[in-house]
Image 1 (cartoon, rainbow, N blue to C red):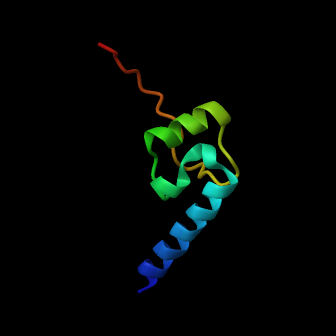
Image 2 (cartoon, rainbow, N blue to C red):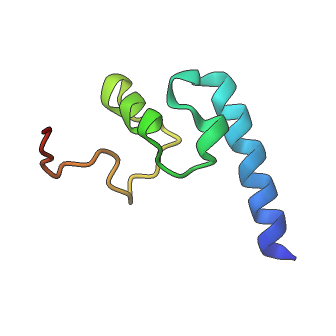
Length: 65
């Protein structure tokens, strides 16, 4: 039951954060990094709500063919 309550609380927090910072797409990703969310971090930087324990932007090289 505690995990359900924690997820419900986190989802509500993500909805509020999305209203304050729409550039990150928190209403859709619910705390998981999506392409839009990573682009928001790249373009606007992290907020105080971003977890510093995670790698916020992928630094691995990619090839565009």
